[in-house]
Image (cartoon, rainbow, N blue to C red):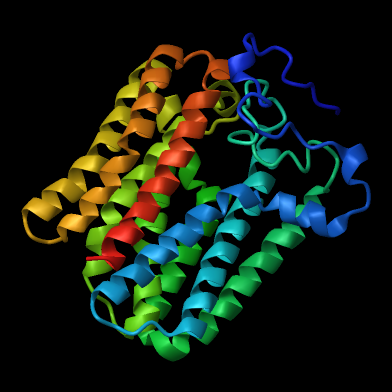
Length: 332
């Protein structure tokens, strides 16, 4: 069915145009542009998270004194992005099957409510399933090639990462519906991907990418948490009992604030204990964005259309935090 524009948003400061955010997909504009439809189905704007996560692992390897192998590094980055794309497409399929995207009237595109490719008639369920399967297959292929430098440690990490990405949305497991999605996303982006990227360069497991990835793990968890606020009603109706649904939006504010605060406290504590270089304190530069997000969420937690600035600030804070982590390691 056709989608409404965001005309219900009450003030010009929260409209998509005011935030330079795109409106929902228009089937008449895309027409037969198959490649563009495929790209949009992966939610390309958010694939930067995977690039940053892998970059943290590469920076950890560099900080250890290793000479980065460029071809393996590039293939690692591609593999991380393809895996994230596969998980995004798979999640869209699962949320269409469980009905949450179809009834989601409070969605705040492009942050929440999925890519809307199925709901807008741009892709069928079968095409979406086929795309997810192709991306998972490509991920496996890239992973097998990366076993050459990464060895058996990478095999373990790769299987773990692939299983978490699949289990997050798979109906028979659905980690997100069981209140485990937040943990899975944090571990995936903050631990598994950085550790995997480091292992490709190092050929063995090391603690440094884990220590440096803890803060980013917490930030990505916060990002998922805040994205669940606008989708609260639709997800509850569909039986997706993630953390915000379980706690309720009022109490879930504390979860977001606690996780975000921990993301900034963790590197400060690790620096104080001598486990990280002082340059890692650069991540504190992302704090103002997180404060904006936290303040807006505290006031507008039950008003989805007023959360757009908070959602945008959290995305920006997470990407900046991860980029500053890479910078801190590079110049340690």
